[in-house]
Image 1 (tube, rainbow, N blue to C red):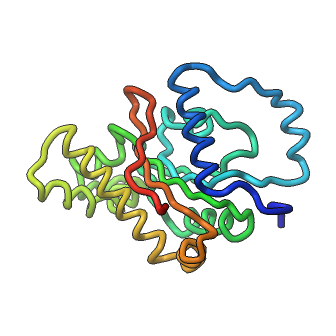
Image 2 (cartoon, helix red, strand yellow; image 1 turned 120 degrees about the horizontal axis):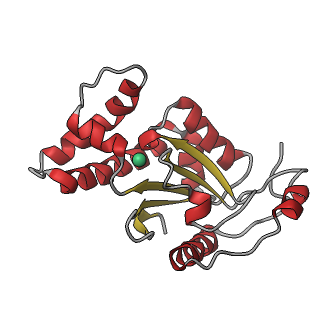
Length: 205
Ligand SMILES: [Zn+2]
């Protein structure tokens, strides 16, 4: 197993670094890096700063949005951040074996998977059905508030992100115990396609 050789940065410090990276991304002032040298230095193992759960959408790559590089982020991506056992197991691996101090749930504005769950909660189309079905309860929750259009999609997205937060702690003893022991912190966030900002919706400190 690869992992930290000693105590790494704390969750708050890591979030500070990611926030600074997001600011660089917004301003277009990216960190210069020697990727060839970095790749060489990472051949013997990884000790990422954080684990990130985010959408598969091509516009929301966390390494770019947080201006990070090879070896910095342990990322699980599925359409609509739908979390199935293998994805949950991947996050558990990052927590238990790579000792990441921070787990970031990063949803985004105008998510196509959430829109699909809002518009076609009973969709039957191959395995896309599984994606929509997982988001449908959050879509129904937002619909019950009488919202419509983009407002409905954004409210459904935020409800889905909170349900994911609950699901992580309910279904994963590894994550629940790490949070309770203070070894792990969680940030629930949402990325704006229009201004590039990652907004914090909730965090555990
Ligand atoms: Zn999406």
